[in-house]
Amino acid sequence: AQTVTQSQPEMSVQEAETVTLSCTYDTSESDYYLFWYKQPPSRQMILVIRQEAYKQQNATENRFSVNFQKAAKSFSLKISDSQLGDAAMYFCAYWGGSQGNLIFGKGTKLSVKP
Amino acid sequence: NAGVTQTPKFRVLKTGQSMTLLCAQDMNHEYMYWYRQDPGMGLRLIHYSVGEGTTAKGEVPDGYNVSRLKKQNFLLGLESAAPSQTSVYFCASSYWSTEAFFGQGTRLTVV
Image (cartoon, rainbow over all chains, first blue to last red; front, side, top):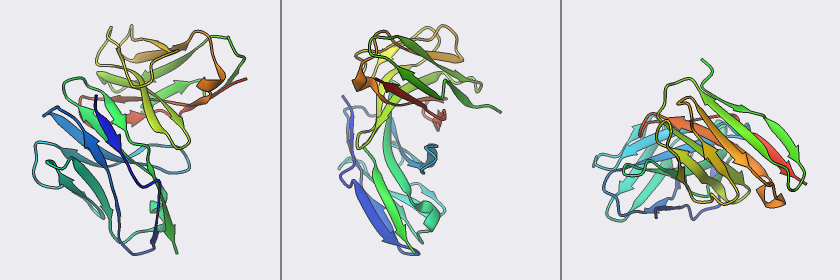
């Protein structure tokens, strides 16, 4: 069975600084996709970034980028120039192509200090 | 564009009662998912469906049943509610491996 592990329950960053959230996963599949979702206090789930496992190039979306290390099964999220609105729960997620299941890690609560 | 709609938004049940949560999506998505979210546990997959008429067990399926008779609807049933099923439930849908769209959540309390 696939698993997703986020080892940092809470993180804190100063406004305008950079922070990296960690995620590791375990799978025997070759076809899969990885995601980072953001959940603010409103409970709405918002897609931050998506990575195809077959692509070597790391995905980027404006201030958000990932460091995808396929051999190490690591998928970290870097947030640059942190803003107050980035404060939220961040979830790493895995989608497996053979089964179609979408599973999540336990999340990291990010605080942004002004 | 409604997206993913969950019904109801809040519910209080007595132990042993049954109920059904409805998830409806209007994006013609093949994949649909039910999760529960508890503090410190993230989102745990209960059941999911890869198309009309199909269902599969997720990480925490015990005590729940699902049905997907129509492509746009995914129902989650609790046959005999227990206090351990007190949680916030989310439904989501996606087109294959692309972005999953989530409902607004259902807060269920079992007393």
